[in-house]
Image (cartoon, rainbow, N blue to C red; front, side, top):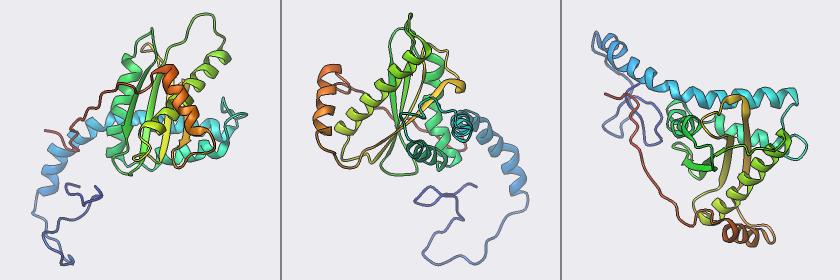
Length: 228
């Protein structure tokens, strides 16, 4: 529970290359851990359930054949996107869900806001979050199509700018203005390996027209599994 290996998987601690066949535990160690450290981890895991909620919401509609974009966005792509979300372990879900939940709660009502987060567990996997406010005068269908197109365009530019570092792009879009909820989420998968004919030219054109990722800020945040 306390120790991880080079892949951030929990393991027994080892100070040499020799295989461990026996492990000793001090009496009372678990009681102390369960009383002090474990509650802190569980409290900080609460935000990770936002990630679970996205998986459950999309899976429910996936299985019921009620996905909003079922006709123009393949089930294969939805399944692939869901698998990328589902493979993240609990601690990684906490790391990924924290900026997602913050954007859901605090995004402005005036303009779209994008954030990105790399998977802490799997190299080459990037998640893109889009808070997209609804403009007046749009029908539900017009709004969702507009939001979908915005996400698709942005993911194309993400591939253009980070081509050497990203293999898979998974988009999560929702309403902006702090009114987002799990009941209004679209999931999007965009492959970032290789370029089809004219695909790169299209991405360059989109960036020139929109200014996507012309100027962007990167930041890091320390996340402890068992915070003090």
